[in-house]
Image 1 (cartoon, rainbow, N blue to C red):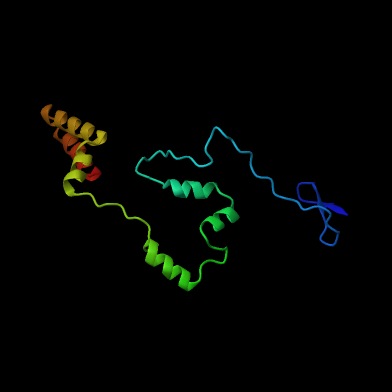
Image 2: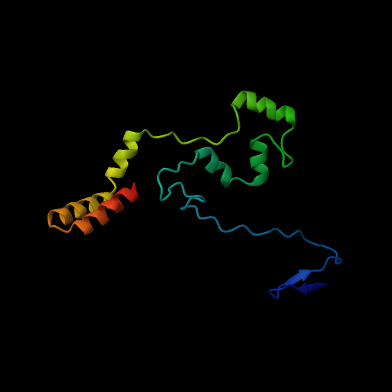
Length: 141
C-alpha cells in the first residue's frame, strides 16, 4: 500500500510487492543548447572535446567506451595503459617569462589610469596624491 512521502506523493512501502520499475526522470534535453557550455568567461580555460563528450554520455556507455568498470582497472591494466598513453597527470600551465608578465602588467587599464593620474598629480604640485597613486601602481604589480 502506498504511503505519502515528505512532499505528499504516494510512495510504495518496502514490504509491498513491486509491480513496476521506477526510473528517475532526466532533465529535458535542449537540442539547441549544449549540455555543457564550451565557452567560459575566462578564455584561458580550455576543456578537451573528449572530456565534454564524456560528460554528455550515460555512465554505462562511458565505462564501456573507456574499457573499464565501476570498480576500476586492475593493477596490470593500469600499468599497461600508463605505458601506452603516458602518466595520468593534469597538464601544467606554461610558465610566462618576466618580459611577458611585465607587458601584461603595463597594459592593465587600472595601472595605466593610476600612472596617468599620478603623473598629473606630480605635474600639478600635489606630490602626496601622486605618491599615493604611484604606490597603488606598485601594489597592483
